Length: 134
Image (cartoon, rainbow, N blue to C red; front, side, top):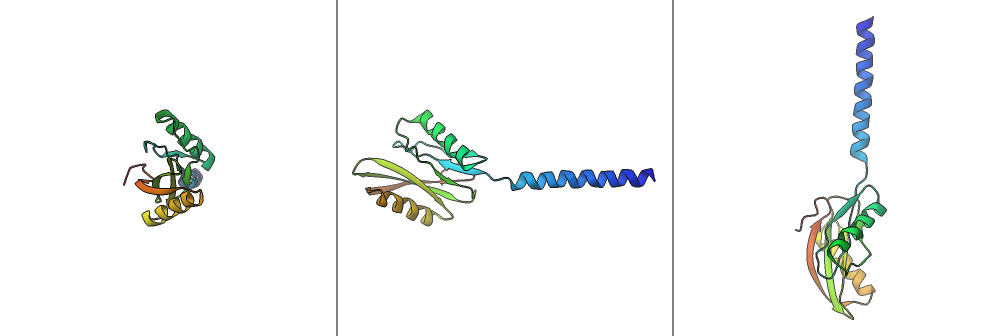
């Protein structure tokens, strides 16, 4: 009888640990980048979108005084950020995230155009998952 009780307890512990692992794996992770004129911002991460945005602004402010203070975010770590800067009517930079480089570029260009910017140049792409330039 004791062996059966011990085996049953071991199974329950294993199920409990497995479900904890599943919950951990399912926790959402957000990536954000707050671009600046020098194009020196890096990707920051957080458990929530608000936390990732806050961290992205903090990271940008450590390297620049020209932060956009409007971070682009995603909760898809496979996404790519496109960072674009424009020179008219004044210098300004923005970023957008999407599944592909093409979609991210189209999104950031649309956002900047709608805000009245022109003479825009794509500066680089960054991986949402790793933060590395691509």
